[in-house]
Image 1 (cartoon, rainbow, N blue to C red):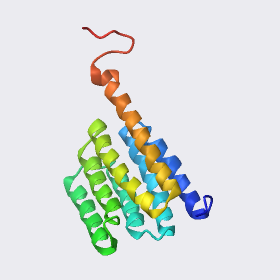
Image 2: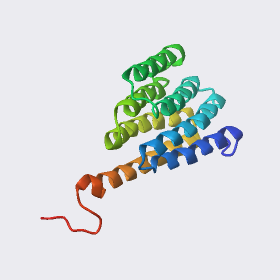
Image 3: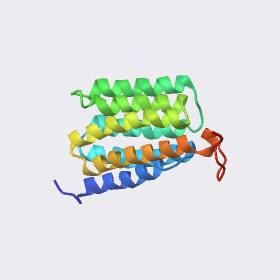
Image 4: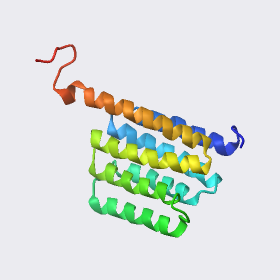
Length: 176
């Protein structure tokens, strides 16, 4: 395996975009950066001949952008249906379903959740992609999903402890 082949370098671009995405506290920036990450991911997995992952990443890109405009359950159902059709057509093994399931869960998160609940579901998606990437021998993808998991956990902690959530203003001491 070549660490700096064109295929792996495209995965590294996805890595940078994905980490930047999950460090965002604002949902809009998160979704925009995930869309950009997915373009690189789709190309990367296409080059690795992992068609279910490539197509799921492509659909995730479109879903991320569309979720900025609508929260329609019908649109979410359409994306879930498309992902299931991709899985039925291209997933030849159980592992082939990992990115498909991740994309379906991500769709539910993007269209129906926000803040901490959305990021918790996205963490499950990240773990599914991580398993896919390890088994696909994607160096950049494995580093990406591991780093995204850590970045997402860090952001979840920051959101959970943020003054707006706890009701404590910065610099004040909570009442005991």
